[in-house]
Image (cartoon, rainbow over all chains, first blue to last red; front, side, top):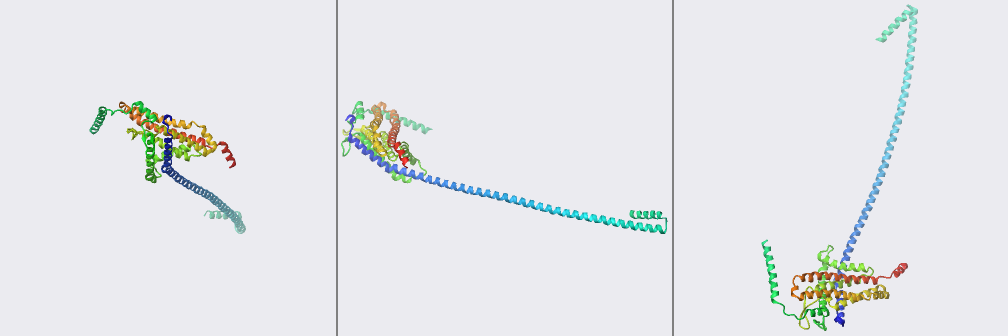
Length: 161
Length: 274
């Protein structure tokens, strides 16, 4: 054969390569690949677990946020209610106070009216008494005009005192 | 500082002594001319080695068997002592092993996404063989020929029989991928690339043989045997090993992926059915 090609040796090389390929596959390639796959699986499961925990944390966060939002709403409602109640109470008190003030005013007006009438009546009575007394004195003793003047002076000095 | 100078002086003295010794001793006499050495490196028709139970074989065959034995022994030791101690946080050696497996597995997945299991196994095996086999020539392992001379065992793939075996086996693997992926159509697809076994075989053979010839030439003359082998022997061989491994495994994976890829029409029909 040209180039000293020998089919027997070629077959021997084939056999040699077949043994080598098979041997390396079982001794090295397969175990190393299995280990790499196992490690990949391990890290994938770790990754998956981490992802699940992350999802769970996210869910909890959402729930907490929801609760927080609910609490905010409750607080807002309570505040509004309290404000309403305070306002109502203030209005009631104001109304009460207004009524009381009105009553006091009415009462004071009535009393003042009553006092005025009383004073008026008392003054009329005094005037009548004075007129009667003056008339009586005029009729009995002095010149009525002088007596009237004396009496008026006496009354003025009495009031000054 | 003084110690460093002493060490340097000793080292230089040792080199000069060895050089003088090499030059004064002289060559024991050549058993063959450079032409004969080169011719034998290509044809392997003179220096043959006896394989028990078989006729005399080329030195490359012995190299191939030795490389396989070394690889399998190393793999067995790794399987027994290293792999059971693998950790999720890998050490340096574990990373090296994972990288080696990952590179070929990734290449198989990338080139043949539909059917990558078998081709990954195959390219891992032959990739290891080409890489370690090419570096094997650096060891300079000796064997005795049928004529009683000692010869240095070459890289297995510098033997045309090994290169043809690897090229044709890779082609058969590609054909098997075609059959597995597309049945009879796959055979047709693979046969379209009928030049593949020849190109694969002779690319490997040519690349490895050229390396071997340059090395033979360099080592044949004593005057070229200083400093130059560091570049030719180590750096070139290392680069060579990487390139040849990459080229053959990549080509195999690529063609395997191409012929095993399901037909687009079939794909559409399956999609419609499902």
